[in-house]
Length: 185
Image 1 (cartoon, rainbow, N blue to C red):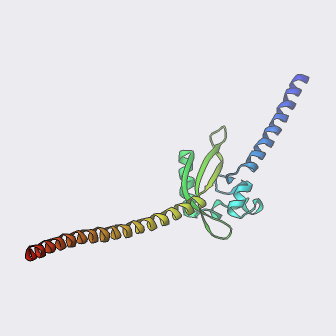
Image 2: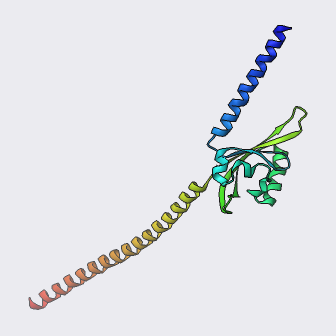
């Protein structure tokens, strides 16, 4: 009996340690994370989620995910997630506290009980803001480069045209010089 009690005590201590590790990992993770119930209500969020959305945990917990995600998309997302069990990298826009759109990839996984009933959903977001800014900058630079190339092509045509005209004129001058020599000569 003492041995059984010791095993239970050890298991409880291990569970507490594991729970502490899990909480630390959730808090430490650099990716925005939240845990929602099957109805779409936020049950927990991490500091990276707070940083991205501007909502602290007290403001986010208890709110529907539709506070951050378009309600129509949320319904579609939850249906697809329940059907597939997970979503890996779907691009969407979420709203921060100031109402600004933030482009993100969303990743989600359904959590089920032993009876296979959904009891929650883990969601992670990958902020694409900087990537989108760089893409826009690249597109802008690409357009500028294409314009410069067109300008260079026009310049090249002018230069080549001028060179051809110069060659024609030199040939014509030579012909005229030859005619003059024949006349003088």
